[in-house]
Image (cartoon, rainbow, N blue to C red; front, side, top):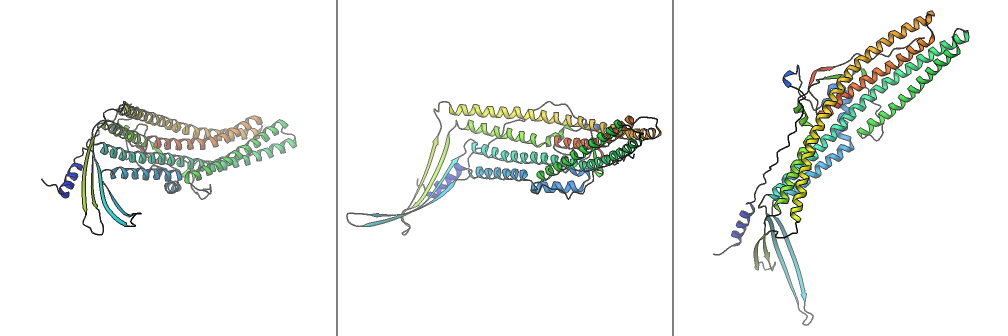
Length: 469
């Protein structure tokens, strides 16, 4: 029976296409976690939102988030890692096709005895292919695909972390602006009262102790103002670095702290929301990668089939001396001193580590979510207490001032009430900032905006109280 080159090539193609497909066998580990919520009991639940920062109602924050996506150096690096993983996937997929090489040579031989020169030239085409008998190459492609997924989730995780940091830094920046303003008013009020006490001291109706006590309050107010001004500058630098601004300035922001809305987050959440967390998605992807790696190591014990074919032309000018070849080779390891067995054991350990890591990541996600929900509930209650505290200190100061002016109480009571009022003003801003940051931590812990029990609310503005002497 005559075997023409066409028949050999047909046989080559048939064998090449006879490869086995890799079948994943891994089941994601189950983790027993407490239920966060019975969703049937939710009075109202909005659909989870990916643009969670829009719940705060700040156009400045929306623009900053857009700028972060475009200009962050960290995100740019993460995007490049995703691009690289896709290139590696393309490289792995290229192995599914035969390689084809072209060789062209020209040779001149000079006979030194008779002075004759002979020339020869050759043209050759060579094809080679390793048949994927057991799906090992398919498993490698599967692993490369999930490596892309892993890098994508790394990017999503980093983006979520940066978005949360940006939102919290923005809230700090706005709050510090207002706290500086309050500190300036406190300094002015303490200076005015100091002037009154000095006048009374000179008139003989106030003691030197009272004068020095009020001077101490005035100096403390100066120190607090300087500290907040320094914190404001530092906060601006933090924002600029997150945004990738080389100028380290964000002076164009016009947002108002009191206009920020407070999302009212349900204290019970569907556990399914945790599935969107990038770190859980990343841990799952690494399970798939290590599963495929274990299969590839096991496949090394089995035979491999390599095919090669060649087509050559001995004399390019004449075009008549054609030749062809086809080679198939089957090989398998017989003795390797336990090398493959140890590689399999190592891959099995990597898979076990990935499974343990997956369980740990899920448990940590649950713990972080429960902690952030608990912290949010605490900050809600604390803000209400701080609001009542400020109102009470306002009344206390007015009463102490009236009694001091009428001579019914001493200066110590007036001084104490003034200091308490200064502190209550500043503490209320800190409490609102803490509640805003607590909501951000919930979004970060759940990987997405959680269900909310009501539309975001705008709390009553914090109005600094000016103390008059």
